Length: 314
Image (cartoon, rainbow, N blue to C red; front, side, top):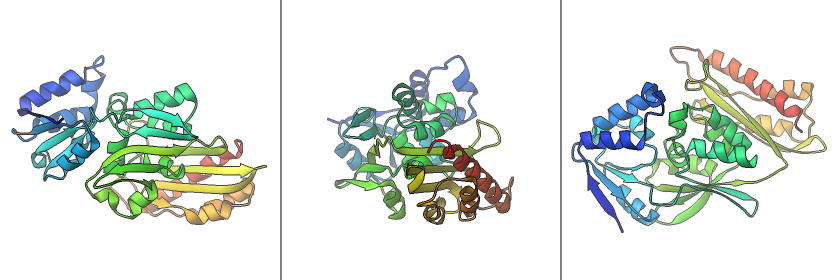
């Protein structure tokens, strides 16, 4: 059954305030949250809200022009408010969960960053992912940003993609037919640009995998220039598998295959780390703050520090 509501801009703004209490004034002082509220107030006066009960209904609804999915609401920051004619709420699709079974962990797409952090704290699992998400955004926004929405939007400052790619995550997608594909294929095939619903993220629960992530931001609450993540598997300290990814670069992400190949069948010593960095060459675009060369140099420093951190864990 599908439920539909119409809201004026004022009613919609009030709805947001009811759903997101001030929390001691933190929310209203959060610059990005204020932008969300301001953007919502500019939405189309005849905006339609849809509340589907199944993924199939949601997929049909977003096929219409100007109708988008609504989870945490942060996507509105990146979308021209006047172009949005309808919002499809995912709250009734039962996608807010984190399950562990058969040596795999499934994260429902409506789970928030904070849901993952809390799960990791409680179970000691997903530590690589939780480490990245705990440093992202602010507390009010971590309570709102959904995993599925963040994957679909993929802002260049994303703290989500690098760790998930390093973990070789898969995602289940609903469009015309449900399918499970790797997150890397999701990006490389261009599927991210199509209209679809992400249902869940699937990650192998591998106790032998050692990983880490580092984000470069001058202050904690700032978009990172880049996020680099490394996941290693080793036997008797000899690396048998390596996955290295960085986001925030030209093309948004880079799979650092040369550095991966160099590390295979080697012990992570200081000399090996020094040589591995020579095979780590992400390319950046300059901006008003930093040159491309500065970003590249800094990324190499962070990559070195990350490998040094992992050396003691193998």
